[in-house]
Image 1 (cartoon, rainbow, N blue to C red):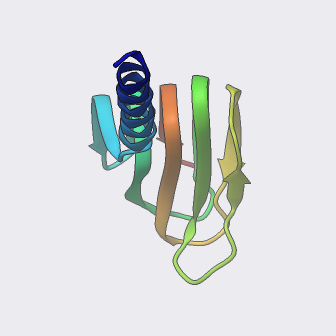
Image 2: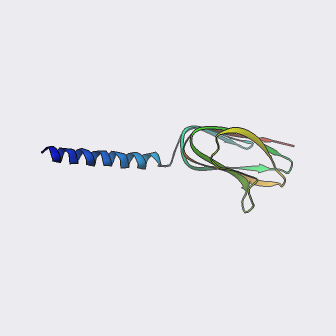
Amino acid sequence: MKKGFLILIGVVIAILILCAVFFSSKEGYTGTKDFGDNSMQMEFTKMTGTDSHTMLLESGDALQVSFAVTKGRFDVTIGMEGSDPIYRGDDLREGGFSVGVEQDGEYVITVTAKNAKGYFHVEREEE
């Protein structure tokens, strides 16, 4: 009887561990987003998955980017479809930068996260 009870507890613990792994990697977003013509604002307590925003930019514009990620992984790519990115950052933590735009067009800002917590802000500065 005692041996059967220990086996049952072991099975329950194994199921709980599998559920925790499954649900912690499930795509989702908890937080706020504000995507405008000239900005992209994301503040999140949990983000897993990919999101993107397209902005129409002109040569001479610049994108001011600031971010702080206190948990998880957060990657960013900025560029025009079919071209090399003008910026790529993997596993961002905290900071900010400005990236210049040399060619008119639609630029896609793509963020990919896994169990991330923090914020990511982009503002267009016109020439």
